[in-house]
Amino acid sequence: MEEDFSTEDVLVDKNSMPEDDPNGNTLHDALDIRWGPQHAGAKLLASQYTKEKRIQEIVCIILFIILMIYNFFFILRYFDVRNWYLIIPAALLGILTADLASGIVHWGADTWGSVDIPLIGRNFLRPFREHHIDPTSITRHDFIETNGDNFAVTVPYLFYMAYKFTFFNDSDIRRLYNFEVYMFLLAIFVSMTNQFHKWSHTYFGLPSFIDFLQRYHIILPRKHHRIHHVLPHDTYFCITTGWLNWPLEVINFWSRLETIIEKYSGAKPRSDDFVWAQKTEKVHYE
Image: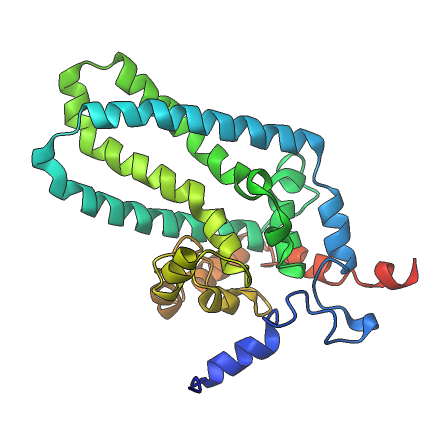
């Protein structure tokens, strides 16, 4: 059965990472490597992943697991079956919040700043630069490198949640319970965002249940996310489920923000991203 392709599908397929050649290197002349691990910029960025960064990611993942188990104990302890109907809205709101948050962080890190910024640049912006010129690098990252930063984002609030469950009295905990359930679910979705993102770039060997979740757009689908990987990477930033990408695009949400920021700051969107994309010569002539 033939699949119908729209004009947009054809353009996306032509200008993004080919599915049958995930690194895009065999379909182009050696002097015109567009993306993949042989791209000079990708090589340099990958080499900047440090042992210190690795340790930070491991520590954050360990803290996340401990805090999630601790807080989950109290979530179960104070669960009231009469409020079961609040769990589904809390879960949906958590997904939408995580999707929006993923878009804001993704847009901010893709669009602004430089890898040269002290502390933030190499530790947090570097993976975003690498990902655009080697989209499949994320599929070669292990669980720690893939998810360490997302787990780290949730740790401060999970500490605060644990503090409240430990030191607040029963009446205060019950009063705050629904909000804490929402935040707990939000932490789960935030922590899994980059794993969903990784799966959206994985074309072989995914478990059937992941294929099912992608096919029905419960998590970020591969075809949907490829729209973001068409130069200049200026749309479809939400990567938890991608549910908010279309409505945000309809209202030109990201482009309007960029216009305002550029007007008052003079900063050019994605200027650093463009610089890294041009680093091609070293690979061929060194």
